[in-house]
Length: 88
Image 1 (tube, rainbow, N blue to C red):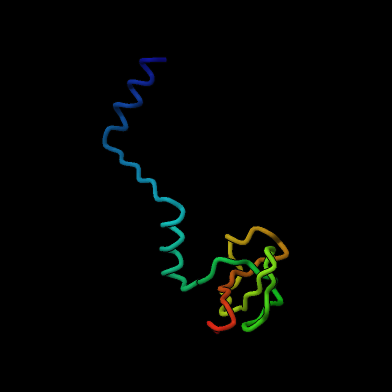
Image 2: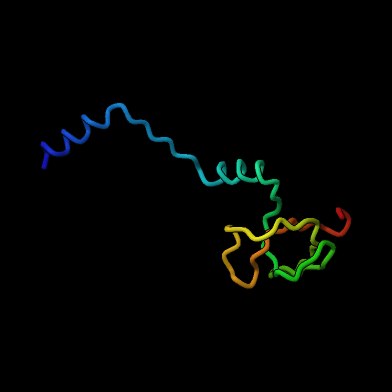
């Protein structure tokens, strides 16, 4: 087993591995696609709609970016940017 491990490690001496954190990869993806927002909303949401959050605060839809892999709940598949009413 030791011999196999040593042999394997010697063969990988020219390889490099880079770990890119998910937050960095997400920002790069957003820069390319133009997607915005940290919230997921229903498919029926429109810009200007009022959204009540679980903490009872009210925000408004400023922009919709379409379906996103970040939105894992099937009832809320659309990524959205939400803001206070004053920011619309």
